Image (cartoon, rainbow, N blue to C red; front, top):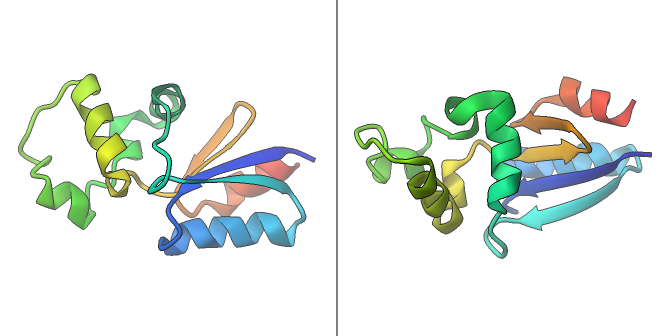
Length: 115
């Protein structure tokens, strides 16, 4: 059975859905609460390489809008620093199993991780 890493926050409905999905299927999961521990830059890059910054950032979320990121042009380093301080900028959850990655509530990708 695959080892699943879920990066999210406990009060996120999508994060709880991912956790429930994998627990119901008895998968081994490692939950990383981004409010307690920041995601490593290397982990974010893995998701950015697959989905791009536009796929990783929650551009419709309040945190993104309130931070004024719609109007700012930030470097990758500056974006990473912002994400470390405010994980709500990300589309959560970020789910990884080996080389497979998924963002948000994506049950089809989750099923692929378990296959």
